Image (cartoon, rainbow, N blue to C red; front, side, top):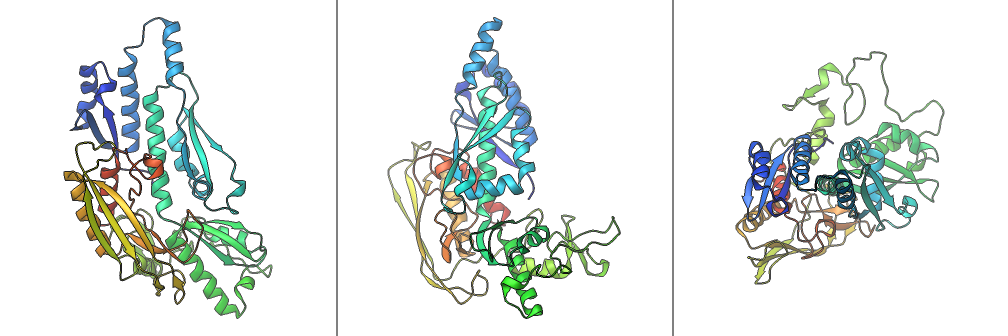
Length: 428
């Protein structure tokens, strides 16, 4: 998982008394004007530097005496708005995405999570509050809000690709599994032969294939297939050659004659990549698309659209587009987590502003629906229930209010964000 390469921030010119100073800072970033706001796109580091420059422009209008400057900055840095997130997703981010999380915080913010994660596995739908607190009182709210928004974007992108499942292993086998599958978070449960696994779907598929292969080769039940003998190890085998390249999928050394390198310069075992492309034709490392993406959304679903005259927060000039999704119950196929088992269908509503951009996104969402990319079958991160139809990794606004942390409006960056998500899937 790579860090953000292309993100968008919104700057309201009403927050700046020095309009000339604001434009001087923005001119090199090619801003787009929308109403009283400017939108700027760029890499994380570029926009972080921009937030510092914007703070300086706003800071010019703080009174010049030292005592007054310190006092007003101190007031500006508090209070800090918290973000409500699902505890199971946050635990995965802390354990497996620490580098990205540290990059968001930098040296100027600390992260506070309340309450602790003790109830995560007992209640998958439990939430925690995440707060980014400035380490210094001189940090302006512009930067604080920027850090908070980057976390929200990162959280949503991470959560959209996460699956939670349970597998059976030997009492000590989960430690060996964790070494072999570092992208997964594997935690013991109350059953000594069962572990809870959280991680990207493609890596969970690899885990299940590995367990099935070991079960067949050993002739034992899944609970006995790992680490039951001191000479057997589930960790990746390594040669003594430190320059040997490992496959990011199976974690084994790549044999030269079986190596395949993609245009994005990432290399894999040929067989591993073939199986990964059977699931999704994207690079497992960076997500670059190769071919037309087809999803695992169950067949027989319907997508209907209605409109009304009420407006969404932030789009007061426009009416509202209401998307009605209906996916009937059925039997899982080979492409789903538990082939042959029934799954529970779903009916969902989503909202878009009836603006030119909103209507454009609606057309793209229709194409994504036809390519079976909107939904999948798995375990819900909200209820913890398994074998049900769930959202895939294209974000929808399922509420008209509540802001981005409650999947509602106002959220001025949502339309550009979902357009980026669709573009990654080849839908433009």
